[in-house]
Image 1 (cartoon, rainbow, N blue to C red):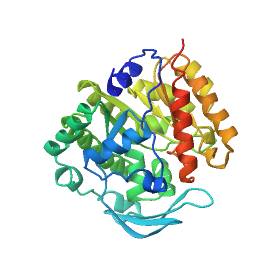
Image 2 (cartoon, helix red, strand yellow):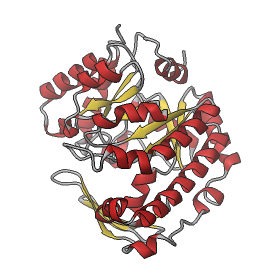
Image 3 (cartoon, rainbow, N blue to C red):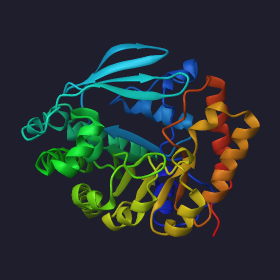
Length: 355
């Protein structure tokens, strides 16, 4: 079986004798130094080389906001999106991402906000993307296409967490205007990606803190469930899958995710106090978990990291429908430790699935 065939087999509930690696990658690929070149966006050959180095079964292409670097060094990266939002990422002592500016700061501004459609009308060419997807498929890879997440897009590109969470309760018109716009962009991006032949659509929207949801289930069902349901229907009509990334303690929404048609959920990590064994027992036969390995591996000894990786895989492999992965990508570690982790992951995946 090709890696792509293995991914599809797992998503369809088959128990293979080896666990495929799904979308694992370092948060900062430059940490690998001269071991492997950083992949070039839109260059299938460099992505294939990078993906094979990681031992992954999946390749990726994306439709997103244009971003420009303001400043960058080993300790930080400050950048702006085409909407005017400005963010700063810091890497030490741990990864931290903070917003510095947004284009919408008042409910009235939300009513007229609209994205430029250049992301999928000019920067993303379906024919060129289809050729790249075909190269990935010929190399045996499962291909994901990244589209806008309806909630994530609001707090990344448009307005602050505080604003959107408040407006969802007391400024319904403003909140609905923003959700309608991000939903529109997300669905149109997904259509273009599916036209290019991707196997799955990947969307991000962090819906919880480390201890709870960011808002009630009722608000999720009002603002986000219609988007996820329409998106999953679109994917399934095209014989593709829907992959949702959501940090946070999200167990209260799992039944809703499944009801909306989500096929894969990520990351279900220990930093958000998610119990992987419980998730497997309650939902492991209904949804695939791309999950489990904590970013705390960066602070672990070699022995602790081995114990943690193997414990996660031992829990997740029972019943199938599981791909191990770090919570946000491999945390910023030394080149040597990153390679050590990749070797451990490959070794643990040799265990395969069990009933």
